[in-house]
Amino acid sequence: MIEKLKILMIDDHPMIIEGYQNTLLFSKKDNQELKIDIANNCDEAIKYIDKAVQELPYDVLFVDISLPPSTDGSINSGEDLAEYARKVLPKSKIIILTMFNESFRIYNIIKTIDPEGFLIKSDLTSKELASAFQAVLKNPPFYSGTVNSHIRKTITTDIIIDDKNRKILHLLSQGIKTKNLAAHLDISLSAVEKRKKQLRDIFDVNDGQDETLLNNAKDKGFL
Image (cartoon, rainbow, N blue to C red; front, side):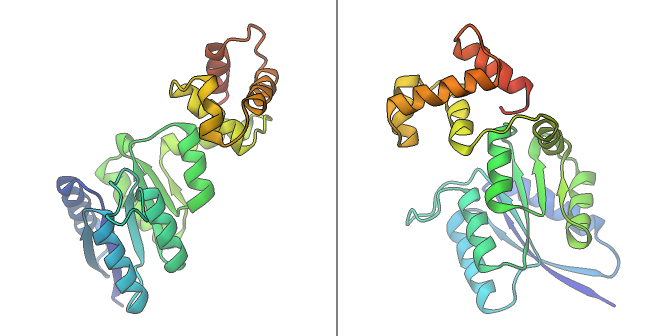
């Protein structure tokens, strides 16, 4: 029996999409028939997604996280796009592709989108893409090695920190100064200082240095 599969691939690099497309067509099973739509930006992707809501939903969406915003500013990245797709096409399976491999981003994407597939582009081979596609159809989720190792690191530690504290670590690692953190987090400077003290206690930082805090957080898989 023929299995007809409708796929949307979203990436702003046409050569990358061509590679993905060729891999899927070459590695598909004999009874699978693939209809692949291609979007090179958020605007094109939204049109395809909205059309699929009215007609036939996609079986699988491949979404690159690093996309320029939509022209109306409602969608700012592939992350927003995947969230939108999850809302309007709840039965479609989403495979995230990204160059980012920081724990903060991985944690956030898993928390907000809960994708059926999560692949880091620097890990990616044709074989892994083909495996991910088949696994997501039959037995999701499929996470690449880097994603799994980040998840394992944070699961095996008994440290639990909330979203704001995770964001503080992430912003500090991006070089944002403490005095500017309050504006990014929409809390007061004294609340930031209090949270930084919590983090120093959690990660056993005795010298009060941000660098030590970041190194210790990285060792535990939080960065």
